[in-house]
Every structure is written in C-alpha cells, then in structure tokens.
Amino acid sequence: MRVIFMGTPDFSVPVLDALVDAGYEIAAVYCQPPRPAGRGKKDRPTPVHARAEALGLVVRHPVSLKGAEAQAEFAALNADVAVVVAYGLILPQAVLDAPKHGCLNIHASLLPRWRGAAPIHRAIMAGDAETGVCIMQMEAGLDTGPVLLREATEITARDTTAILHDRLSAMGARLIVEALDRLGDLTPEPQPDEGVTYASKIDKAEAAIDWTRPAEEIDRQIRGLSPFPGAWTTAEGTRIKLLMSELAAGQGTPGTLLDDRITVACGDGAVRLLSLQRAGKAAQDAETFLRGMSLPRGLILGES
Image 1 (cartoon, rainbow, N blue to C red):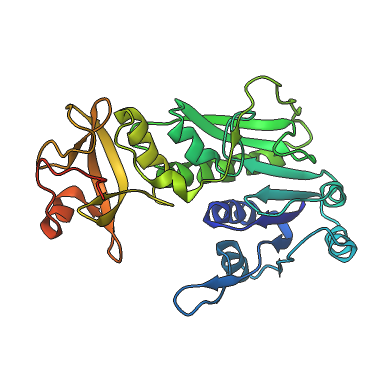
Image 2: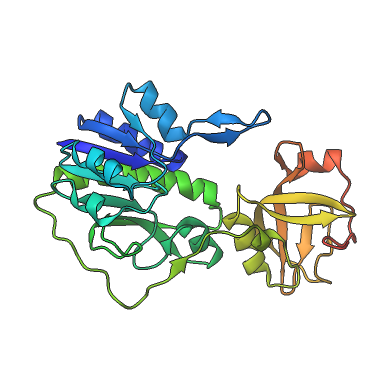
C-alpha cells in the first residue's frame, strides 16, 4: 500500500516509524515548514521533518495546500491512502479526495468528545475518567468524519498531558497499522450528534493558578497544562511553574502553605506540589526545589 504521511510534532513521529516498520511504502512525508527557534532564531525542521530525513524519505512542507499546483503535486503521488496526525494545515476537498481510500486521521480523543486542537489537555482538565484514540475517515468538517477504529485508556490521578501524550501516540501508531491492514473490512461508524465537545487551543492566560478554586480543579489544571504551557503561581514575586501535583488533606486561606512539603490550601481542600520549576532552571521534585528556594509554612502563594 502506497501511503502519504502528514504530521508535524513529536506526537506524530512514532506513527511514521510504525508505518515504516510495518513495510508500507511512504510516497512522501508532508509537515509544517521549518521555523525560527532557539537563541539564534535559525530555522529548525519539525520533529517529523527531521525523522523523515533520517529515514531517507521524501519531505514536502508547503505553506498551504489550497493552490492548484500543490494539489496537483499531491495527487500525482498516486497514493492509496494518506495518514494524517497533528499535521497543522486544513486539507481542502481536492486533497481529501486524491488518495484511493481518502485520508485517515489519528485523533487523540474518544470522538465526538474533544474535537479540535487540544484534546489531551482538555480531557485532563475536565476531569474525564478516560480518553483514547480514534482512527477517523476525514471529511471537510472539523474532526466530524466516521470512525473506523477506537480504543480507550483510563486517565489516572498521576497522568499529565506529557504522560498521556506519549501513551496515546503509541496507541495511535499501533491502531493505524491495524486500520490499514484491515482497511477493506472495517465499517465506518458515523459520529453521534450527542456528546460533541470542542477542545479549543490552550490560551496561556489559562495557566495562572487561582487558589480560590477547588483543589480537584487546580490539580487537574496543573497536570493538564504540564509541561506546556505550564500552570504557574508566584512566591514573594518569583514566578514558579507547577508541573505535577496531587490532592492532599488540609484547609486554610487559599494559597497558604500548610506545611513544609509544599501543601497549598485551595478554595476547597488542598494540593501538594510535587514538581516545580523556576525560570532558567530545570524542573525539580519538591524536596530538591526546597533546597534552592525557601517556601515556609504560612507563606501565601500568588500574592503580588
């Protein structure tokens, strides 16, 4: 089977590897163009771009697929199917229709819940008990196409977006190989109209901790925004990124440190901070962090 692969970030790389390992012919790899990054602001290829070049695959990174020339180049690849995972560009109908079996998308949620840009973050922040991966036949609407395969996984109290990201990426890689192997036998299931939610892109303004909120919500905010953009608070004017937490016993004025283990009172209940990071420094566990910065009992976080 001749496959066009379309993806950009780290999440997509295991999928590309799985397709290559399974022996599929990769006609071309499409990804976002290199963009300035790092201190020198030099153009840096995306993770998929770098991996595809290492595998000796043809890489294309058009700025848009809306033009007739780009669409003709895509169609000329004569692909049986396109596999799309976190590509980052809207696919016009001409592109969706070009491969013999159309375009299959790997989406990191249990559709129709969390259509859109940030399904992993939103599932954790909403307190969902589970999430998963769907292999979907793409159509013009936003993640509206019929589902070929789906698999669920529990969201635990120890899951961050980073942890869930890696688990779902591996799941998607395995499922897409199964879907391609069974392509002629799978029956597309239309998504129900009930239960539709949208996972809007994460706004950095969502990252500031409001300690008056319930502990369960703050814990999910911290884990859902870890590692990026990272929930944050301040301690005596110093900004601290919070990367891992757990629910803890305790009550007090919201934002108050209740003990010497960085347990923080919330509007209802408390959370214990397990992983923290100051600007310019690496993330540290709580014990290591306290060796470099004092956070005494009674200090109120978030005060300006």
